[in-house]
Image (tube, rainbow, N blue to C red; front, side):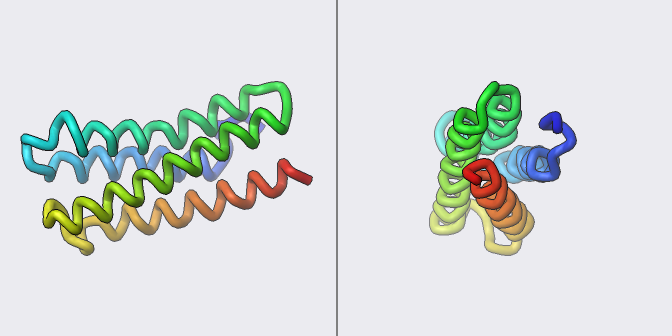
Amino acid sequence: MIYKELIVWQKSMELVKEIYSLVKKLPKDETYSLSDQMRRAATSIPSNIAEGNGRKSQVEYARFLDIARGSQFELETQLHICIMLEFLTEHETQKAFDLISEVGKMLNALIIKLGK
């Protein structure tokens, strides 16, 4: 199955769109720090899913999925930081958190499937 057909890739692309929307709400002085880190973490998720899918072995694929999962946790932490610093509200970030959770569960399931 090519990566574009994977629901986890599609959902992670939806997450990228949501994060890009959210970072527009951050203070301008965060443009080159937190905003940039959040965009990079978000885009890393579908990018690593795609790159792993293109690899020749399941071991390599699982390694890239694990990197995507790390980016997922990084992004989740950055959203918590935005809330803590009162840049965003819990209400504003709810959709992103829901997508992060959904993508994380799918990544875990795919990693387990590849390990068998």
